[in-house]
Length: 226
Figure 1 (cartoon, rainbow, N blue to C red):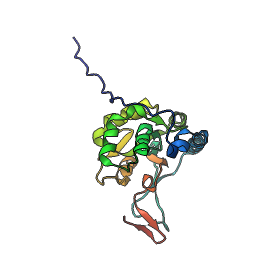
Figure 2: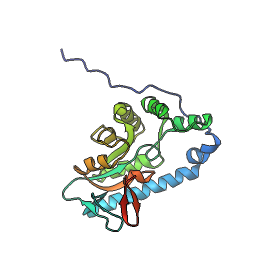
Figure 3: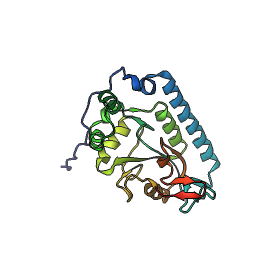
Figure 4: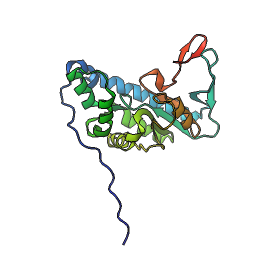
């Protein structure tokens, strides 16, 4: 008979975030205003991406090596397929239970705790409001949606599950999902952006900090290392 197929791995379940977030989180995670602003931002991104895809961008938004603030140069698109690149955590995915626990217990960021969360938190997250429908519309415009995150490559299976269960996928490691460890440089994302840019014209990016666009700090005279 046919060979047996191993079942797909499933992330361990953890309790969902409570309905009433603590005071420090009530606006971001519990208010209609925050949700509305998030939806508005994602709709604006979608509208820009769909319109730009129709025009056919000549250049990506990824800076070419050696660019400076005074003389920015961008990688040309050529005939590469179009793509948009997003960060994951608090850009596309809300880590509800993790953030709740951190707020209640008064903890600062702890790498070991976060590592454990990557492996166990897939059932206690939610998509950022507006992200699911915006990413669907972007894909329908024949633009590839890629994720570039500092979650660990060794936890790739669980990050795939978190994104896919939240309705943000398809997320597949090294195809549409790029993780810390996929290229040299640790938390720096430029190596992964370069890897992505070998295959795609990245003409839209989204994130929550400057490193989601460019690793290097900028000054009036150009780029300087960290």
